[in-house]
Image 1 (tube, rainbow, N blue to C red):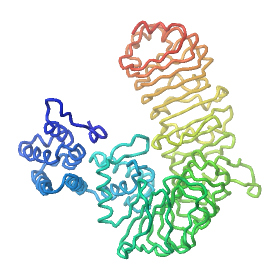
Image 2: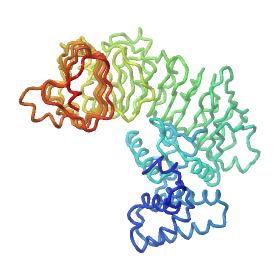
Image 3: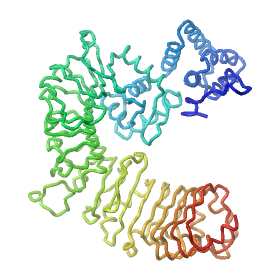
Image 4: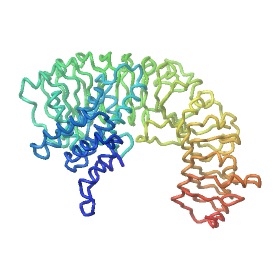
Length: 615
C-alpha cells in the first residue's frame, strides 16, 4: 500500500486491531525491513507511537527513515520527536513534517519540494510542466546539457518526493497533489527561510506589504488571486528570483496595467509568469530583466508584446492556451531560446517566415491544437506570409516536437530524424488534438496516403520509439512504404487502425512484444483480423476493441498445425469489446481459447459467437 491510499487511510477503530497496531503496521511497510533488526525495532516502535496515529505523519516519518541501518539515526529521530511533545497537536504535526523535509539528502530535492508548495493551487494540485519551466528559470537542475536530461532529472526527483510521501500522484495525467498539512509546512518554510510571499486559494490581496525588510529579502512572489491589485510604480525587490501573477479566472474587459518602471529594480528575476490576464502592452522596464530565463503567458489575451524581443537571455517562452493572432516577429531575436510552447493557441494564424528557423538553440517546440497554416514548399520568400515546415530542419538541437500537419502533401523530405526523443505528431485533418494527453507517450497519428511524402519525410524513422500509433486511410493499400515491418514496433504499446488494409500494416513477420491495446474499426475487406502467428505474438495484449467490420467472420484465423499453440493465446486479455460485426460467428476456427484474465466483455447484438460457449 502506498501513495494516495496511505495518505488518506483511516484507522478502523471498530475492529479488534488498535490504532497503535494499525499505525505500526503502516510504519513498517514504509520504513522497510530495517525495523526487523532487533537493535532498531524497539526504538522504531517508539518513533511510530510519537506519530500519534496520524497517517500523513506516520508515512512521512517512516519514509524519511526508510532503510536507515544505523541505530544513531533512529535514536536521533526519537529524540527530536520527543521534543515536540509539549507542542499542540497541529504544531507538533507541522514540526514533525518539517523534520521529514530536513531528512531529504539532496538540495535539489528540497528546492523542488518548496517549488511544489509554491505552485500548488487551491486544490493542492501541481502541474508538472509548470514545475519544469519554473525549475529551468531558477537554475534548479545543475550540470545538465539538454532539456531532455532536465526532464529526466525532474521526473526522477519527483519520484523520490513521492517515495518520501511528501508528494502524491494527481488525479489527472501530468499533475501531482500535495496533502494539506504538507502544503502548509512547505509554505511555512518558504516564508521563514526564503522570504516568499504566496497568496492563493481565493484569498484577497488588498495591498502590498508596508515593510522595507520584506522588499530587501523577498526572493519569490506568487499571487493567484480573484482580483489583480494595483501594482507599485517600482517593485523594490532587488533579490527577487520569481514573480508570478495570475487571476483565478480570466475576466473579460479588465486588463493588467503595469507601470513603466515596474521591473526596474528586479534585475535578478529568473522567472516571470503572467497568467489568465488581459495584457495589452508590456512595460519598457522589461529591458532590465537581463537574467530572465523563463517567461510564461498562460491563458492570456495578448496585445502588443513585441518588447519580449529585448529578453535576449530568455530560454523558456510559454503561451499556453493564450489568445493572439500573430506570433511577434521579435520572437526570432531570442537566439538563446530552448523551449517554445504554443499549445492551445487556437487563434494563432500567422508566424512570419524565418522566425522559427532563427531559433537555432531550440530544443522543444510545442504546437498542439495551435498554428497549422504551414506554407507549402516551393513558395518563394517574397510570396510567403507564413512559416514553412522546412524551417524545422534548421533546428539541429530539436529533440521534442508537438505538431499537427493537416496535409501530408506539404511534408518536406527528411523533416523528421532520430534526434527527436519526445514527440506527438498528427498528419492529416482527420485527427483532433488531445491537449491533456500524457507528454511522456510518443504518439504518431497518420492519415495514410498513396503518395511518398510520408515515407520521404522520415516519419518511419520514429516508429522504433513510438508508444502509440494511429493509422487511418483506405487508399494506402498500394503504398509499399506502409507495408510496415513489425521489427519497427518493439516499443509500441497502443495501436489504432481505422479504414486501412490491415494486412498491409502488420505483415506476417510482425512481432509486437509490448503491445497492450489494439483498436480496429472499418476494416470492411477483412474476413478475419489476425493470423494465429500474429495473435500469438501479442503476448502483452490486455485490451482489444473491434468495431464496424462488416465482413469479419472470425477474429483469429487458424489451421490444424496451430492447435497446439492456441491455449496460451491472449492470456493477459482483460477487456474485449466487439461492436457492429454483423456476420461474426466465432472467435477462431479451431480450438477454444480461454481468457484467464478477462474482466470486461462487451459484445453487441450479432450472430452468436461460438467461442463464448467455450468459456
